[in-house]
Length: 140
Image (tube, rainbow, N blue to C red):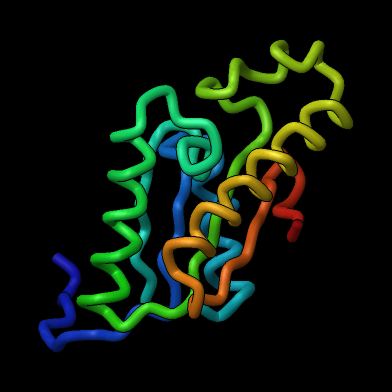
């Protein structure tokens, strides 16, 4: 077993991310590329989508609560919102007629809406948005 860190830590970011395992290498790569080190990762179907267009208000509330806890317990100031290509929670690429531009624009809109919700609740936070496709993660 790997030795675990017992000491309390400050998270360099809280990341709202989809649980789709196909994109786990992209998430790990982004964490490394941004040199984030310790992060709190909140995984949910659709990633940041439920912050923008939740099927039920409690889905949005649950994500906001996780961000709040990360801020409170781990001193997090940076919030990273992510959505990925071909996300089943968004209907997959087929929901956008397999048109990558159409899919990107819709995801960009969801991320922007999610950012507005998060900014309203946590006005002092640094908020970043990423769309990940099968080639890279693109900052929005």
